[in-house]
Length: 273
Image 1 (cartoon, one colour):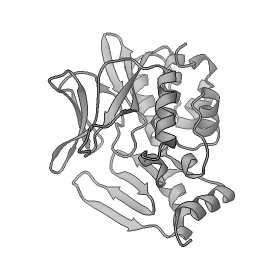
Image 2 (cartoon, helix red, strand yellow):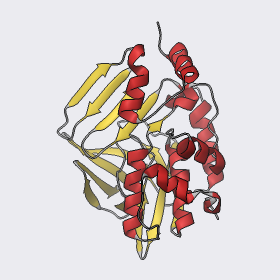
Image 3 (tube, one colour):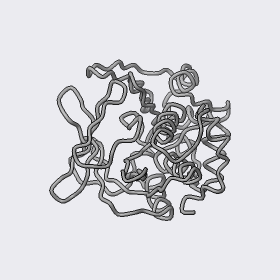
């Protein structure tokens, strides 16, 4: 199997998500698992902030995201999701995207998403993009538009054939990332992960980033700045004092660090603590 689905403890994974329905390769299951995964497992880069490597083998992913109930970033999240889908019987293809998100220059292909086939339809799935990410799959075709909770998304095909995932903001459609149809294998994400988790220019090694997408609000902690974004474009922001960090991580994102991890995070990344 491409995604090592046979090694996944599917019961433990479903339990982590709080999913109690039947697991079969149909659209209802795909939607339910995607929605439950996004709700249960936050986006976060705290391993890098703690000076640790980010292994992508399935045993490590199950230990961290399922057993220890932590979060992760795109490769961790979508590799785990791909293994679960493969184990259930879905046809899953990995893809790579260039994140745009307001960038003024062309970025490298460093984001992972999935193409999942259900019958004759292909679905764009991504449980690892963070606060602006999809809550459920979206049909992988030009012009496909959906409302998920209070948020709107669509896919726009550019003249060169590239598909662009967009979300609606108060000033119009906003590009999240762009991708083509070239299939990617697990080894490709190992290379991407090495750059993203170690390169001096990678944004993910500079400061803590913890995010969670929800049907009503999008939550984000970047450094010590907590942001709650609403569908009408309004944003609530505040600085998080270090003595509130542990509570905010647990309450807003479901991330629980032990005392040693918390102390290290504060000492290394929160000046003046």
